[in-house]
Amino acid sequence: MKLIDIIKSRRSVRKYQDKPIPKGLLEQILEGGMRAPSSMNRQPWRFVVVTNADEKKILVDEAKKELGTYLLTDDAKKKWGEEAAMRFMERAKSDEDVIFYNAPVVVLVLQTMDLGNGNFDHGLCTENILLSAHSLGISSCPIGLSRPMGNSPVVREKLGMKEDEKIVIGICLGYADEVPDEKERNYDVVTWLE
Image (cartoon, rainbow, N blue to C red; front, side, top):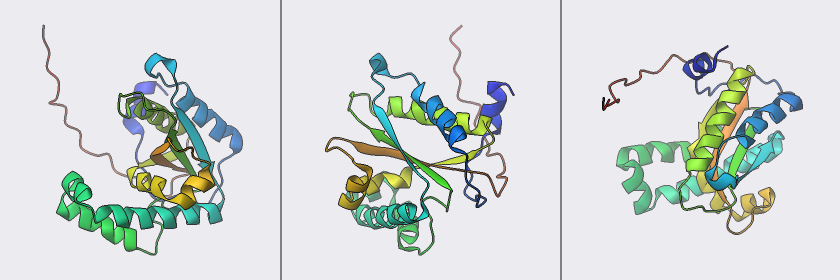
């Protein structure tokens, strides 16, 4: 499959089969992330791969707890708006895994140094992981709501996070148990200076 076809056909999946992903495939997917370009080739990332169900449950519980705390702040309401913050609060209070959707694998992308360019490098790395996974028949979903769990002392210790490390994003990986529809795209975003 051509790269453009991989890009066009990738979807964010939130329902997964209860089927493990072979370690060899996970290593290929992560290599895709490691090969992303980065400012001055600093590669300011590290990955934590979670496959153990008990460990994922701890992460989900801590993510929901920290998300609930964050949603009470003015910053959250300003960032997402009152309506979205209330919707996310329902997720934070849910008994279900509304963070990682019971995915067989969760990859956490950590920032290991602040290069002053925001999360640009990590975005490139994450997209490489998503596209690498799709090219190998593995579905994925980037999870921004996993970021607040980086404030949890339990999570920081469990992941061996250094003081200056941050969770940039979580990524669910697994074999799809759904086929999401294609989302509408806005193609009226290009200005040509000819």
